[in-house]
Length: 106
Length: 106
DNA sequence: ACATAATACATCGTAACACGAGGTATTATG
DNA sequence: CATAATACCTCGTGTTACGATGTATTATGT
Image (cartoon, each protein chain N blue to C red):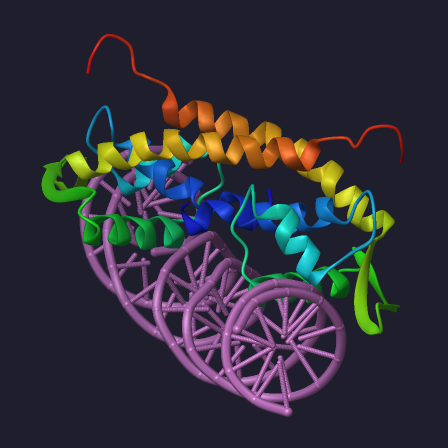
């Protein structure tokens, strides 16, 4: 898929992936992969960005003798998803503009 | 609106603006403004990019004693719009993933 | 025991991109 | 003669996605 179209979608996809249950890097990639391609380097960039924006918090926990970094969504993160739903209305109106056929020709 | 979400939409918006009828910079901005905010510097960047990608051609014409650069969509440009329609299906599936409520909790 | 793959994390450099700030020139309005 | 509108263009900057690369552990196969 076009790289540009993915932008803006990636952040909310990651937030969605940790919304119901805390998750960690490797699992997030697996969860969103069926919907959107996402490399590790991109994910960690996004996670860092979302942490800075206080949309998620990080806590380290042991799992099978190995340390994992779990990501937990915050109120701000949940709010971002809600905002996205609002923005979607604008996106849809843009989409309709683009696909609109001008009457009578073509 | 979120800058990231706009990306990928801008190019097709500009293509749509010249699809039915050749247009020029100033008019394109006015035409797409109701749907998506677009500054002059951004538009000219996009027009140059689309020209390089052979999605449009440029021809200069006089209008009221002043020269205007008219942009004309090519086959490739039309094809890009069609591709966008296909990509939209993926975008929709991502959207559904993001807004999907997980059953029973929260 | 050793190689390979999978899991799990992280950083660096690069290219693409949107956009504000700034510039030029003409026509119209007051 | 000043201001606004029309019409074009360029440069620099910050954000971003991602390939390449590196480290370390656990599991699997032979």
